[in-house]
Image (tube, rainbow, N blue to C red; front, side, top):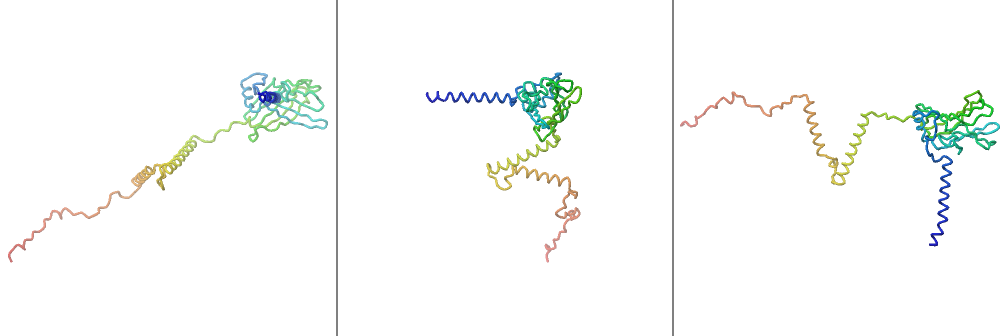
Length: 279
């Protein structure tokens, strides 16, 4: 009993560490609770929701990139339909060494999704407002996700920050992923598939029949071939049929001997009874 009670504190500490680890992973976005459903579209539509579903493999993952300038370096963190860097409702954030609080570039609670055959454009609105640019409008992040069949997920890249205008300023990011690539269609026709299946069945028949004849029946030589007698008969019949159809010489056989004419049969042999006469 004493040993059991001594193990209770150890078990309790292990359970506590497991709970804390799961909470930490959930905070960092390793576990995606709702996937792309967490994104709130500005104008809810089935077409945009379908575009977001294509990005489901990317949900719950943080993608970061650091841009160094002359005076300061900027670190951007992007997450699909999740809290980027642990910041609530932030889809993209900007961090600097001089700022204690990260800047929200775009929020996934105000999302717009546009998709093509091999690309998806994700737009996060309602970021923090500019201090002196773009008439103090809210920041906006545009993430261009392009098809790359060789990469499951590529590196996040900052293309530009367009803030030298009066309105509609934006941050442009680029990311490569195979998740947006169109599905590869089979190049095989129905006839090719039938031939492949036929060859596979023949191979199974030959190999299986050979093993059965060899190991179970104990056949040797050509007798190991499955249904050997049947296939020999089929070959003989095929050869006879081919000979009958394809040969061009006269099929009537030449007589083995010369027959006797009717005139010779009608002639009666001359009776010679001279030997009966007295000499």
